[in-house]
Image (cartoon, rainbow, N blue to C red; front, side, top):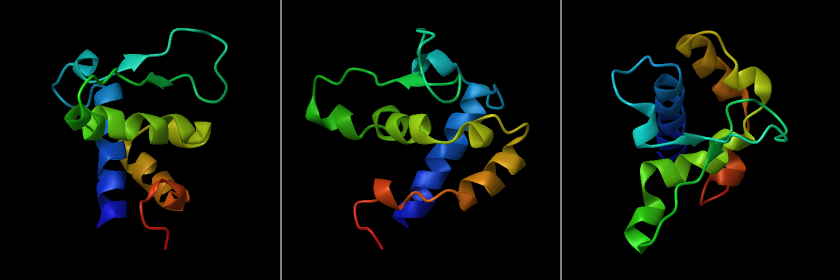
Length: 99
């Protein structure tokens, strides 16, 4: 179930980034503006969390995982292609229980 939630979070992040959902992307995320980033051009900045409850919020939970995705996954042309590519990525290091 944890892996399923993680994949669903990534699907939603992709949808927000590509404006496939009628919701403001800036509400949750901020794109990294420095040009010295390695990897894909859609690196996100972790929003600051002053309270413990905010640390497990959707945006804080998904940003490190999103930034670790390979370029060919993030640059997928459609959501369905993105879903297929995410299934091939090993996300076990981001799970609390490593299976």
